Length: 64
Image (cartoon, rainbow, N blue to C red; front, side):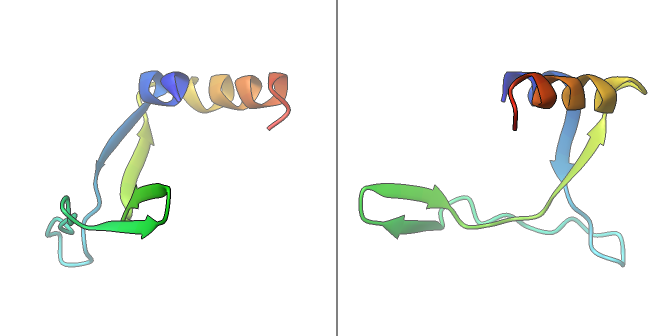
């Protein structure tokens, strides 16, 4: 998780007309003991050109 935060920009996604897609920050999915946010669509882009390769190498090392 820390590597993804370090290597990627995570932003609000935009609709086809260029407006930000709102995120329901108060909504959640309550599945008993596990509570998680309602699914949302972020825009994830690399912070620098080598970021994708570095994250992929980390995934291979962890067998993910």
